[in-house]
Length: 52
Image 1 (cartoon, rainbow, N blue to C red):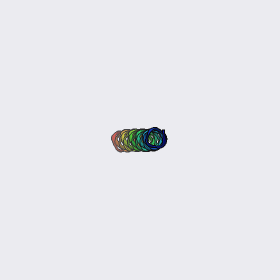
Image 2 (cartoon, one colour):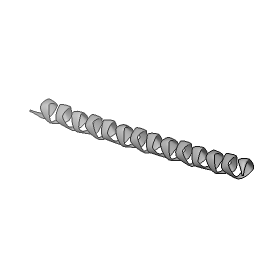
Image 3 (cartoon, one colour):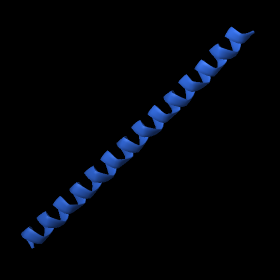
């Protein structure tokens, strides 16, 4: 029974680690997307201003 408890605890820790990693990856992806969008908008604005 003790070993089963230990295994369950280890699995829960692994699940927590996986969840944390997934959250971090999602946050990084969102940040990258936001940065790309901002850069694109800035470039478009600059191009429009230069053209006008």
